[in-house]
Length: 103
Image 1 (cartoon, rainbow, N blue to C red):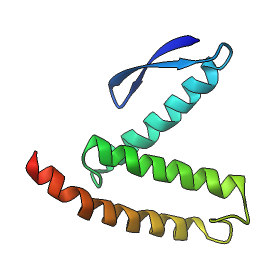
Image 2: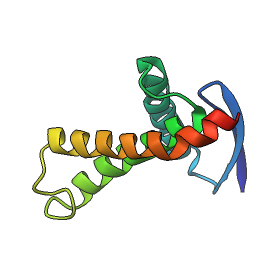
Image 3: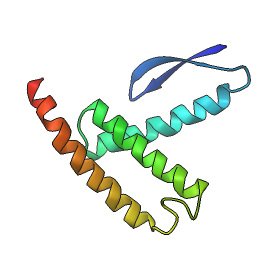
């Protein structure tokens, strides 16, 4: 196993991968970091946990739309996918708000 030290939203992580997969992992880290920083910088999403969940949902929606054009997101436009993500974000806001008030 190879260990890579990476930064995601300024936070250091040590990740393991197989020999020869370093570049793919670096590209994945860069892509995720870009998504998370954009969410953070938009000011619409607060808290690292919430940013990570929203980035994961966004990346998953992209993956599913590319993976299976006739799958769960196949007949939906990107606008519809974004609307669903915003609805999920609202649900997350409501669910996580009590936890943030405790902090």
